[in-house]
Amino acid sequence: MTRVRGRFAPSPTGLMHLGNARSALLGWLHARAAGGEFHLRIEDLDAGRCKPEYVDALKRDLEWLGLDWDGPVLVQSERALLYREALGVLDAKGLTFFCTCSRADLARAASAPHEGEDGPLYPGTCRQGPTKARHPASVRFRAQGGPTSFVDLLHGPYTQDVARAVGDFVIRRADGIAAYQLAVVVDDAQSGITHVLRGDDLLSSTPRQLQLYAALEQPAPQFAHLPLLLDEHGKRMAKRDGSSTVAYFRERGLGPERLLGLMAKWSGLTDGAPITARELVPGFSLGRVSREPAVVRDSLT
Image (cartoon, rainbow, N blue to C red):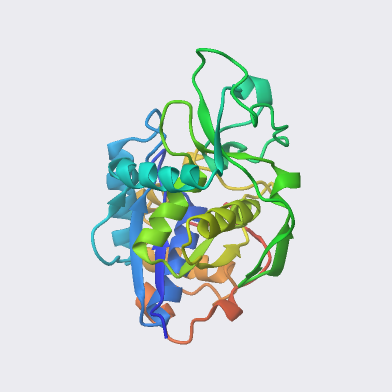
């Protein structure tokens, strides 16, 4: 039997908010309950927004919560050669093409999944060759038509026709940096990740990644997309809300056991009593995790 290898892969564009922390906790619990490994990867390809101080803060928050990790911390900005090699493999198979369409042209983002990457359907403008001379070109993957399906460990079967839903998608940005979809696949495959636990907001990107795994002839991990944490107004919690970060509550005297107890309650695991991460490991299973979003009230302290 393959040993479970999970991971937490935050982007250091701000302090860790409660939704990220809850995803880290559940990924850690899943790996530790199975006697497996839990790895930390820093997804810092957005150089304009990622900052070293946020990397330090992320590590400090994880350690404060008692969530340790195995092996060295992987940093995406140090792995450009691996991404170029993967692009070469895809290019040799005729699965890529240069695209000179700008974001304004397509009204879509080109890399980070948290900034509206799905966007409108790409119309195939540059499939037969770039349409703008002497213009920075991104690289797109030729999306395969027909259903791409997988069984989510929380939500069950999920199917998407990538070609119809989003079309050919960016795997290298016009600035030469690997886009999220390619980088995450290369990293998880190279690290031997067997299970990916992440937020529901990334569910629709999974079929694209499955197509890349197949094209690169790499085994895909199993996925579990976690219901999001919502604020008192029913909106998704975000990094820009400083009052929803782990650091905010730590600085106001909330202990790690109290915050862990609340995250366990929001996940349907306990009644919310203070508890350590290690105490949550026995008996943990994904089958116990709530399938519904949890509303986080402003009465944490």
